Structure formats: structure tokens, C-alpha cells
Figure 1 (cartoon, chains in turn purple, yellow):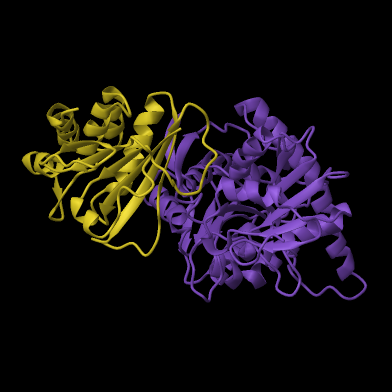
Figure 2 (cartoon, rainbow over the protein chains, first blue to last red):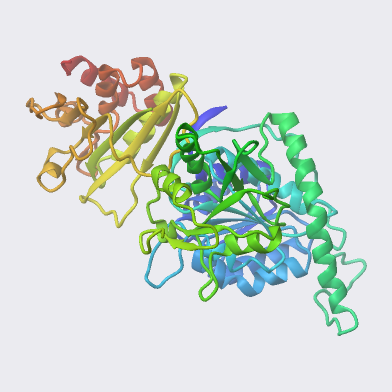
Amino acid sequence: MKEISTGNKAVAKAVKQALPDVVAAYPITPQTEIVETIADYVTSGQMKSRYIPVESEHSAMAACIGASITGVRTFTATSAHGLLYMHEMTNWAAGARLPIVMANVNRSLGPGWNIWAEHTDAMQERDTGWLQVYVSTVQEAYDTTLMAFRIAEHNDVLLPVMVNLDGFVLSHIMQPLDTVEPGDFIPKIHLPHAIDTKHPASYGGLTGPDQHFRFRWEIERSMRDSEKVIAATEKDFAKRFGRSYGQTENYRCEDADVILVAMGTLGKEAEVAIDILRKEGIKAGSMRLRWFRPFPKLDLKGKEVVVIDRDYSFGYGGILAHEIMAKCHIDVYSVIAGLGGQEVTYDDIAEFVRKRRISHEFWFGVTDHV
Amino acid sequence: MFEIRIHSRGGQGGVTAARLLATAALHDGKYATACPFYGAERRGAPIVSFVRIDDHPIKVYSQIRDPDLVVVLDTSVMETVDVLHGLKKGGRVLINSAHPQKFAGFTSFNVDLTGIALKENLVVAGSPILNTPVLGALAKVGIVSADSAKTAIRGMFADGRNVKAAEAAYQEMKI
């Protein structure tokens, strides 16, 4: 059924259909509408889940962990400072191999106080063992949330998944949404190490120097295996509902000499910039990175590459740019743009590509291209 | 792509008007996005919201810089805000006013949405509801079809006075 929905409402609708047994959450701008909507579904009886209104995000993740280890489906949502407040527990969720699904509405970190879009919040969770996906439309937020439950709970994965959507730009925009009847798209959850009171065992116990590295490797092995699960899940989603996205969404890349890489809504607006550049005779393409963890294999050999980072690692550089440089053994033009909701138009993006200087960094609004 | 900027004050329903307009466009078989500009919004402060309508999926998220149409739900914002800023050459202005107003270089329309809301007793917390009657005016200008406007309103509001107010605006506004 087609309707007009915000990004936040689209996530809530997908969660309603995935029907987690437990939702534990704490509101935070610009995510609040997600948990408010879910709370409304639960209190009005439209969604038979246990909703735990906790007193902090640390507790929200702790409650999801406690619920998840009993073998039930769990969901939470957060943003920015809320995500960082969870940080100890996000590590725990991945280490304990719990398939928790979380929506993170990307927002800048204060101070200076700022509630608008930036990816630095999720980037600080980069090394926790969570799968991370960044979406660019209301429809994609809905579809990806549905897929996230199936991917997280797959026996070859059993890791938590974070669905990232840009604060306000996507969380609050109203776009067409075509909801589906998921049917058995998300199979019944089966957690092999769920608590069984008939066979008591301890969880999160001491692992000594002779064992701990094995558990770390198991996380990495599942991360690598998750690429196949993501691909298979997308394929089945496409077969059932007619939509798919891929680990990256490529636009006019086939014959491109220069490729622009970005994540989230900037990666979608980039397609408009590509059309403008093509008209000028510049053979440009856009590669919108969806899955940041596991990091996909990117085919960028022999291309000039421009990367937009809506994040930054102080004393180092744009995080996405440097991951691409390291993984693909290439140099890029690193553009830092859109921090704290900074307005970036398709004309600006086209200009980033026109003025590219490989192996240089450019701060939009601060430095000059040359 | 057709781009609309709506000026109002916090609490007057400018954001809901944008949502209704996008929904009506969807019923017309078009693609549409609506987005409020979120700042430190509060009741009574001037706010803007944006609507884009196109035959193709809309990939643009940045703010509308040169709208085709500007809607002013509260003409008092014009004292502090340049509502014509960036309006395309020959663009259109729709104002909530009983009195016609000329804007050099642009086509303007006016209709007394506040009067219509008060006549229908569409008042919430002391404020007349403008977001449903304005849909009638927008249908009259031809942005969406009258049927889709009414379907969008019915989908969001059970109270039939909302559709009546939109019909009144459609009838009263001269184009």
C-alpha cells in the first residue's frame, strides 16, 4: 500500500511487522518518533511486544541484551549521544553474539550543541562488531529494517545490526512508502545459545588468554560470512517484493572515469550531480556505500575517486575516505561536507567532482579546492 | 520538478499542509517529498516547509532554493521574512488574505483561509486550522487534483468540516 511517511515512521512500521518480542528504548531527538510510534502500536494493541521504557540508553541496550539472550527478537533505536552512552553495551551485544536490531538516526555530537545529521556517531561504533548499513530514502529505511532482522538472526551471522538514517534530512522527510506483507520473509528466531533453564550455563564468563582470541575470530568470521547472507537476503527480498539495493548502489559507474563515493542522503543527491556532470562531458558515476560493516569489496581500480565524508577522525582525516584508501590501495580526493547538517546541494557535489585533486583533503565551507 | 515553499508560523499547520499536499500528489500518481525545515521551532515563530512534486522519483534532499510557488499562510511573516526570496521568474504566490496583493513580476492569488476556517469552526487551541482549506486553494491553482486533495484530507482527518473548508477555498479563490 502506498502512503506518505517519514523515515522514522517507516522504520517503526517495519519493526511492527518484524514483531520483536521486546523493545527497550529511550527517546532522543531526532529519533524520538520511532520509539513513540512503536510505543503507540504497543499500547493500542496493534503490536504484541513488551515495551520497556528505560531510564537511559545504556539501560536500553542492557535490557535488549538481557531479553535477547533468552532467545527472543529485540529492537531499539537511538541517536548520537544516546548511542555513545550505550557504547559499553554495544560491545557486549556483539561479543555475546546477540542479533539485536537498532535504528540509529545519525546526528552530530556536541558541543557545540547540534541536533542535525552527521555520521560521526555511528563511526565511533565502527569496531564493536555490529553490522552497519546506511540508507538514503524512506522506502529504503523500511526495506532495510525488515532485512536487518533476517540478516542479524541468520545462523551464519548472529551479530547485531545497526540501520543508520540521516537525522532530519531522512528521519523527518515525508516520501512515498510502499509497505509489504512480509509473510515468512523473516523466519522464526532461533538463537542456538539461548538461555535454557533446564540446562543452566553461565554467560559472559571469563575467557583466558588461551581462548579469548578465538571468540574474537569467530566474530570476524561471521562478519565475513554475513556478506553472503546480506546478498541472499536482498535477492529474496527482490524476488518477493521487487526491490533490492546491494552492498553499494551504483549509478552510471560502468564507463565512468571518476567515481564519487558517499553514504546516506548525500549519496542519493549525488546522482543528480552525476547527471549534471555527464551533460558537461565529465564521465562521472556515483557509488553509494550502503553496508559499511562488513566493508564491501569496491571495484575502483583505475578510477579517479572522490569521497564525501559526513564524519571526521581528528588528527587523521575523513573516515570513509581513509577506509577506501587503505582497502582499495588507491588515493582519493577527500571531501568533508555536511557536518552537523551543513547544507550540501547537488551543485556543490558536482563542484567537488569538477575541482577534484587526488590525494588532497577539502573541507566544504572552510578551505579552498586548490 | 515543481517546487513549493510554504511560509507559516509554528502551530498553524504549515508542516501538515506540506504532508497533505505530498499525499494528494501521490494520489495523482506523482512522486512527492515534503520536508519541514527544522530549527529551533516554537509556537508562533516563522517557519518554512517544502514540497517537491515530480513525475520521477525525487533524489534531492537539499532545501528548495528557487521555488515555482510560494504559499503564505500568515501574511504577518512578510514583515520579517522575504517570502519572495529565490522565487522563479514568473512564479506564483498564494496568500491567505481577503485582500488581493500584487507582487511585481509574479502572479498572485489570495483567499481568506482564516475566514473559511472560522466559518467552519475549525479551531484548535484558539488557532484557526489553515492546512486543510489551503489544499482546496492549491487544487484550484492546479498543483493537485481536487479529488486527490479531498482524498488526502479524508485520509488524515475524520472531521468532514476539513473537506468542506477545502471546497469553500476552491470555490472562493479567483484565478
